[in-house]
Structures are given as structure tokens and as C-alpha cells.
Image (cartoon, rainbow, N blue to C red):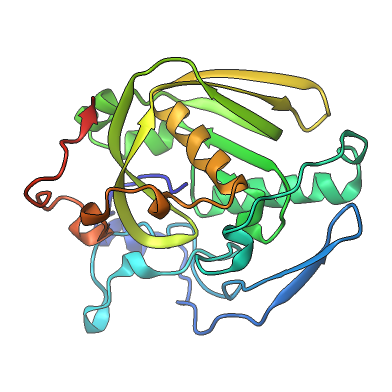
Length: 260
């Protein structure tokens, strides 16, 4: 799930490390799972992007929105691995170098994007693993009114293996979501406001997270990935838009943003 950072000024951009735009999509890559199964996925070119790729709202040369920059290291919508259920991780495999390496890579890709959540299928690995983290820095880029409406609070890094999600109230809310596998777009998605997720941490120990507000939304978004579901599969269709148009009015007849 993409962090909702605000566009930076031209001066701030000049202070950021230069990074070339991606010039091609890499060929199909293959990895071996802990159980020996092999899988393939189409990946973004490792040479493109940058720390803020996919999140800047301005328009670059030739009228192309900078929001369309591809986030490096992530599998993109259309790759079958994002549209099929992932496999559970055998507890005995959790301490293995392969599984721990997958987790480390997920955290690195999420933070570099930057995003607030990532599921293993998004880096081409069909395993039930999610990572999520929301920092005070990320939150500081959002308008205060949005932070309050979304009930968004910082939380430390969470790694959950084989997560099982259940809702703990009937309260729901509609807010815009983005995804690192669907770069440069947003749409309204209705989510439950209160959930509980149980599973195993990266050390194989039981973990249970009770979440509300924005953290609950992130958990639902990432758990959806493990079932082969993208946010565009459950969005309010007429609200789908590029990041540059995020602040434009909703079409007539669309449900209002916020708690329901």
C-alpha cells in the first residue's frame, strides 16, 4: 500500500538524489520457494524509480504525470501472481535463510518506495507474508484534516506470517487507497474500521494485532493481496483516478468520503 505523501516543492526535489525513469520492463524472473516450487513474475526495471517514485503529484516534461513512475522491485497488476491465492509458510521454514531473506527484501522495498505495507506476492513471492509500518514522518506529509478523518497514527514495523483477519465491528469507512503494484492511481475503497489479525511473527512466535482506523485499512489491503485481490477489485469504480486528479470532485452519485 502506498504512503500518501504530499507533492514536494521544486526546491525540495533538487535536494533529492537524482534517479532515472525506468526505460523498460525486465524479462520474467524466477525464484524458488522454501518448498521447492518455482514461480515467475514480471518485474519493473531495477534501474528506475527512486525513493519518491510513484508519489509526486506534479507533471513532468511532455505532460507525462510523474505519479506514473514505476516503483522498483515490485510486481505490477496483470502479473498472475497478484491475482492468485498465496501459499502458507510452514512454521518449520520460518527461520530459514530463504524466508528471512524474503522478509528483509519486503521491508527494504516497502521503505524505499516508500509505502506503509507490502505483501510477498508484490515482490514475486507467492507466500502468505505481510509487512507494514507507518511513521510520524509519513503522516506529517498529509493534511491534518485527513489524518484526523482517517484515524491515522504511527506504528512500528510489523511482520505477520500466515495472517488471519477478522472484523471486530460493523463500522466501515470510504477513503482513497493506492498500491505499489498499481502505480500512480487512487480510488475509494470501503473498509472495516476495526479488525483483528493473528499469525506468526518473523521468529515463528504467535502474534495478534488489534487495529482500528488507518492501520486496520492497511491490514485489510495487505491481507487481500494474499487472496489474489487488488484494491481495484473492490473499489468504487467511478472514483478511480490518477494521483494528479486526487483533489478533483467526485462524480455525481458517488458515496461520500469518510465513516459510514
